[in-house]
Amino acid sequence: KAGVTQTPRYLIKTRGQQVTLSCSPISGHRSVSWYQQTPGQGLQFLFEYFSETQRNKGNFPGRFSGRQFSNSRSEMNVSTLELGDSALYLCASSFRSAGDEQFFGPGTRLTVL
Amino acid sequence: EDQVTQSPEALRLQEGESSSLNCSYTVSGLRGLFWYRQDPGKGPEFLFTLYSAGEEKEKERLKATLTKKESFLHITAPKPEDSATYLCAVRNTGFQKLVFGTGTRLLVSP
Image (cartoon, helix red, strand yellow):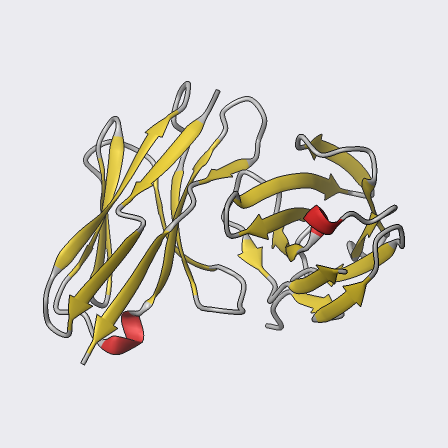
């Protein structure tokens, strides 16, 4: 069974630009969650999508948004990038809920210059 | 507010030197505590889920235990390949998400 895949693996952007990250969950998993990981803050929950609907949201500004498609694939968008957005962005999938066992992808390393 | 605190932040062991990692939590009604392992540059890898005090789970050299306020990850006779960051998370009762600790970086030297 294929694991969670994320593209791209690495990104370099400049302040003010926007970026879109992609995640393909494990086949059959309908819940996709996104996390931001930084050395100081650890793993911070961004949001969860289930059946194309955002079900939960963390404490991040509106510049962070996402969506999910009918095949459960998900995208995350960050607009007007700031230096502090530099982080590892992780996608995780689970069968039913973000509160279940989650399986993580390798992450997208975003660097904002 | 749900919180997870892991200690120590970093731990250095010699190969074969057993030790324990701690995860203390504050949550209104625990509905699951999760342990993950994360290697540098990779996503976390699921290890265990514990649901009730007194529960224990084992996998190779790792054993996770749970009390009402904390969980321990015991590492018996570790090997260099056990070097990684170990993350603990709890399921937030009402919100249906996982709240993560900041992890323990484990380095096992040969």
